[in-house]
Image (tube, rainbow, N blue to C red; front, side, top):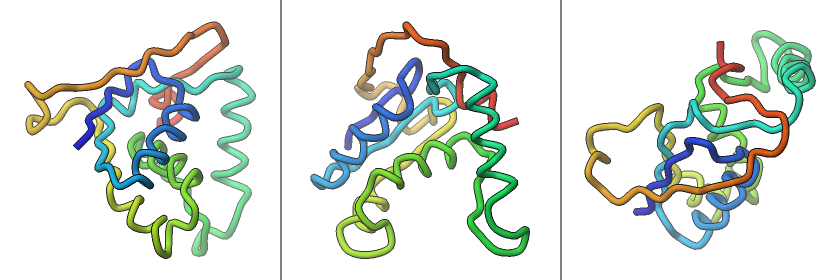
Length: 130
């Protein structure tokens, strides 16, 4: 099992790396999902997220967009998998776990960190989950 610390990682790049590894058959756990970075201006990110959350679908029908940070991250990863409902996409989807903070079962284990440059404007996933 591969354990990745999401603190300071850029969401899209982290998601593509995780999707590739899951398709290869690796089980992956992402910790500290609330501290993952979304690059871009805060206003434009919020505008796009609210458009997706409020304008698409009907209140009783889909698509649904979660406000919980680990589900937000997992949905981005889902978009990078082939078809998450069938075949190898479904198998890869089941191998990915996302957590807020560091659960007790992962304390003391080897945790990989992904260092990425923060030259752009950015916000964390936690700011949009409120």
